[in-house]
Image (cartoon, rainbow, N blue to C red; front, top):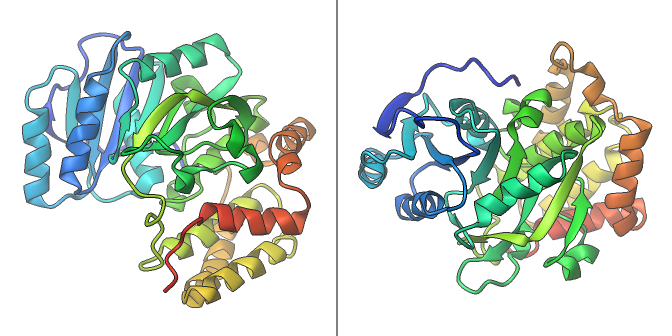
Length: 344
């Protein structure tokens, strides 16, 4: 789960890197969806008011799509397209893309998202500069076509939805658009490669909170997301497996026993059974146990994996207090994470 050193990726297009120091690196992971990714790159390059560099890490696009990305980046002095050795998922891909740059802040932008305004990136960096105890700035995620809330990307207690345009402290952030101070990212150990995708932001946030920092949601700093809230979650493939496995694994990583996680596990099985993926959920439980048993905190970071009283109080005040009792919280967590899952 370290930040490197990683094998050097293959340089495909654009500059070898920025000519000087930058305020922010924008990282974009690519895997096909060339048209959307090209738009995301253009949006990042159009950001004003600060020194930046755009890093695009391809994780296995088809040759024709990689060629389109290369043509779009061309010989841009402020952008670099590289190809990673394989698909590392969201967690591992972001780790490797982040390691490419040196900017004091890192902004991750989904390849199907765009900045809402030309100064969004500058304002995210300003927010981090203004409050040194903030580890991550969570952006408001809006539906690209309409500007409405992307409900599939609302990763906070449902009761806070009326405050979507405001600001509040949180215990996680949404990956589609967020900024992190590089020093804090490195101090916390980055993302856990083992997660691949799903819950990696929550896992990072727990370590940051345990180190005495905050996660700040800012509804006035927004990105627009092209994935429809009505169709984002798919019950095919292994999405439900990763959702269940990773959440249980994270609980065990931070000291919650398997028996204490049983109500959550059973609630997930009910949800999975209703949607025809009971097998995924059952396999996820065993896989979570396997990951947890193999996990060892990196040397020197052991304390980050046992929540302090201060961290527990922060989580209680900024998450649990907005969700109600345990049964209500588990049910709301599942339903809010999958607001419009296909009924198949």
